[in-house]
Length: 353
Image (cartoon, rainbow, N blue to C red):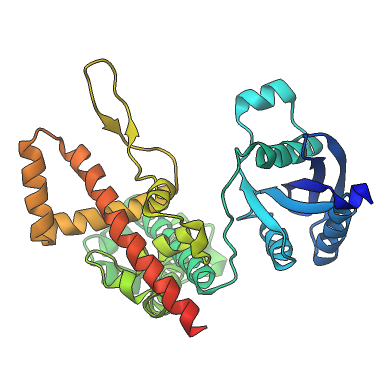
């Protein structure tokens, strides 16, 4: 009965097909560790195993946004508090070594010590839908750019007169010309025919990826406008920027305790870098770099179109700040607006649910 009443903490090292779990008590003593399959049945077995040691207060999980996403949803659905755990630093791993049981125990002890406190994303609402569409669109854009670069590179080294025929055309005319190139499979040993075949295949790929990107952009814009109307109404916030900020925040707004937490999450929290008589702050290199890039996009837009932002830059320049320092300040101010818009949009979603 004493074992049943005691509070225990779990830790999980996640992988693609298996998860390794460990349990410790409130003093940090290891009570056991075991491996489970990364399936629904495995998640249930892991939960039953954890409960066999006592009352589970918290479970620290590595990789809640990747291999541990399914387990995180399962435990959260069962009422277990899940804490997101970063991987141990290199110095710690050099001292302790590396294995699945060691990592699972380290995850549990990170929760016990208070080093790990982050709330993982739930990935069960419209923001997760936004993230999936955004990732797919971004992949299509990158693939289209790579195909265009390949096509242009092949044209540069193409034999005459094919190179002269395709040089100097507009992008649309170039794709149309490449798609009309004849393909003779019995002459592929000829470099000129092989180049023509490759160019036609690349042109077909680019057209398909362009269609896919356009379709995904339309879906993403509509979904973002519905999910976060206040965020998208901000100056400088387009569908892609809004999608990234939503994906960084996640579906559960309780992760964002304050605007300072969002600033830290997006890498916009200034860090002190003073020494002696020098009093200054530097850019935070932590946080979501894609979200920081989204903030930078907003800053660039406002520098061009917002009179208040230009006036602010002029005033701060007269005070002796560099443009980089001014941009960092602007990012922090924009985080405040983004936080207020996100919280309002999340409250509206919760009221409509």
